[in-house]
Image (cartoon, rainbow, N blue to C red; front, side, top):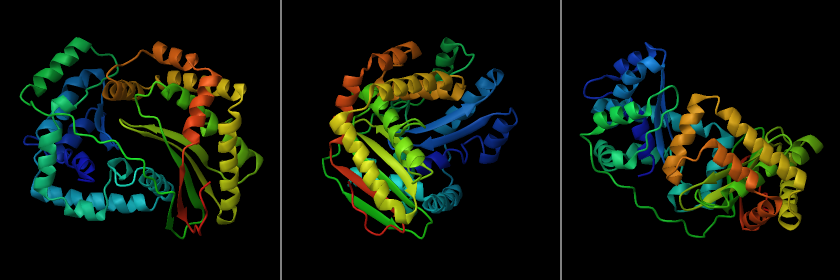
Length: 371
């Protein structure tokens, strides 16, 4: 049911048996709090950020919307229109579309290749009973991870959540199937944009791979910052693009490594040549020791700087528990990054980049070929 989780992301804020949507919004606003949610390819997150004295209120509201949604028919239909507008807005972001096309090409006929938003057809086709049935099956404590960061008493928090969710049992992890090896080498969407938006991608490591830290270092060196290989070559040396970066995604059964570039139509072929040549040089010659050292330093520093924000701490805890079943200390993560050496990084980078690649293009794209 493509788009069901995202539909529920919206609906759970529309009210419960005891609270209207307005009451939820007013109660959070009245204490200066923030409440929101987002849907990724393998999970949905709901979060509240409040002052310590208002934690009880936040838990009351959060557990209420998570376990007692009203699903009023008129609100379901009103929110359906909101989601259709969101899909239209998403369609006006060509860079986002290029990324989604890339994932669709990397994982054809698999849920990882489907936009979590769904599309106009799937959203219009979701009946209220489909949505409530999906909720009853999946939105249960056994499928959930709770995380918090800030000046809290952990024992108090665990007890408070347990008391608020004791009446709601059941739930099991959804069945998963790993994607097969099929790819779509070249996908394009013609749009009358000023730039052509390009994403070159390859299958990569899953979220539990022991080589994931080495790949993170490689990805950072490839296009993760201003000193990275592709940023320096494509933007600084040649002036071919303003926006150029790499990205990595790790999922339960697979992963992806990709490069995004936005460039003028007449520069597409040169950008693809440079990108392909640089990626091939990493496969055959590897990253330079200095590139590896800089990338490791960046990962370490960005991790530590990110922890200055309580929301980032909360997210790190939740993702670690959800995907890895553990929450390593910051010191452990830093040690794992530091333990990666250049030989390990180059071996993992070569294995990933030597795989078949896909090219996703959005814009007045013509017919550029994948490298």
